[in-house]
Image (tube, rainbow, N blue to C red; front, side):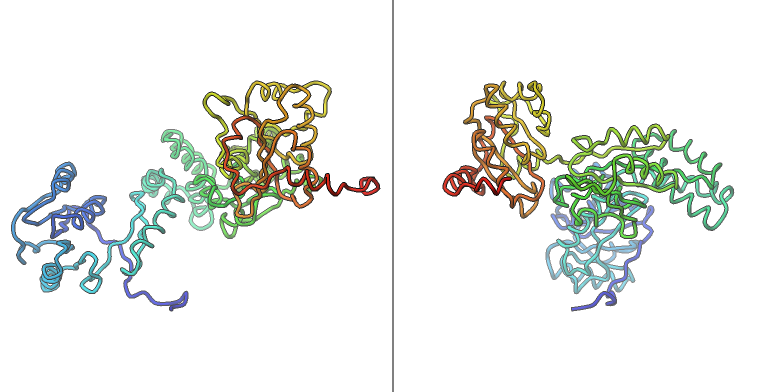
Length: 483
C-alpha cells in the first residue's frame, strides 16, 4: 500500500505527434483498439501486419491509416517516434519491443506491462484540451471508469472555448494588465458569458463578450444558475448541474438538499443554507431573492440549488423575477422531480396506454377551498396524480376526491425520501389514505401517487397502509391524547 505522497514509476507527459509517424505492429483487435485511440492525434499512423481484420481495414481506409501487409522485420520501425506491439503473440511482441529499444524508439506492448517503456492513458479529448488517466498498467478498467467520470464533468464545448482563448491570448497580453486583472479576465472568460455563448454555439456573441471584458477589466459581472438538485440521490444530479457546481463561487441551497449533493460543488465555494423546511424558515423568500441579487452584483458565480426541479413547487418564478428586475444574468438547469423518483422506486408507470394518458403535479393544499380544483376533475377522468408534501393533506385529498366520484378503491402509492437508500414505500387505496397522517415516523419528504396506473407498480418492498389502519382500529388513540 502507498500513501498520498507516493512516487510514480511512470511520469505523465504529452508527446508532440503532429505529422510524425507512429507504427502499430498487428492487424487484430488489440491493434485496432490502439489505432482508434491514436487516430485522435495528428500523427501519421502506419499499421504493419500480414493480415488485417476486415473491419479494421475498412475503418482505417476512412481515417487515412496506412497499411503495410508484409511480414514484420526490424527495419520497418525506422523513422517512428513511437511503436506499439499489438500482435497478440508474446514472442513477436517481445521481439518488436527489443528491436524498438535497439533503435532508441519508445515502445508499448499491449497487455504486457513488463515490456513497455510507456503506457497509453485513458483519454478525455476536448482538443486542444486533453486529460490523460493512467494506472501504470495496473488497472485499465479503473482508468476507464475515472475517464468516464471526468468526461461527464467537462462541457463538450470546452475544446472550442480553449481554441478561442488561444486566439485571443496575444490581444489579452497587450490590453489587459498583468497580475490580478488578467487572472480575473481569464476566470470570467472560462466561467462567464463567453463560456456560455460558446456552449450555445454562439461564437459571434462570445467574441462580443470578450471585447466587453477587455474594455471593462474591473467590472465583475455575476451570474446565477437555478439548479435542480434532484430528489436526493447524488448520482441523479445532472452533468450540467455538477459542472456548474464545480464552477460556483457560492452555493445557496435548500435545507432539504442532502449534504452529499451540496458537497459535490467546488471545495472552496461558499455554502449558504436558505432553509425553508415546513414550519421552519431560516430565510424568507424575499431575503433569498435579495441575497441572490447581492451576490451576483459582487461578481460571484452563484448556484441556487433547489430540491427536485426548480420549476416544480420551487418558487423559482419569484427568484427569476427578482433577477430579471435587477438585470442579473441567469440560467435554469432542470432536475429530476420527486414524482419521477417515487415512481421509479415503485417501478410504477406514471402513464399507461389505455389506463392513464395524463399527469398532474399538485400539493393538495388547494383542496381546503369550497370548490373542487381542476386537477381533481382530471383525476376522476383517469389522470395519474402526484401529490407533493402529501402527508398533512392526505385526509383532505382522500375525502374530497371520494366525494367527487373517484372510486375509494383507486390505487395509491406513497414514498418517503424517494431515490435514497433509506426510502420507505407504502401502498393501499384512496380509502386507506387518511391513515397516512398517523405515521409519526414519516419525517422525510413524502410524495403520494394516486390513479389506476398505480396498480401496475411493484409492491414487493412496500408496506400496506391497511396494516396501520387495522392497528388503529384495534388500539384507538384516546380522545384526550388528541386535544
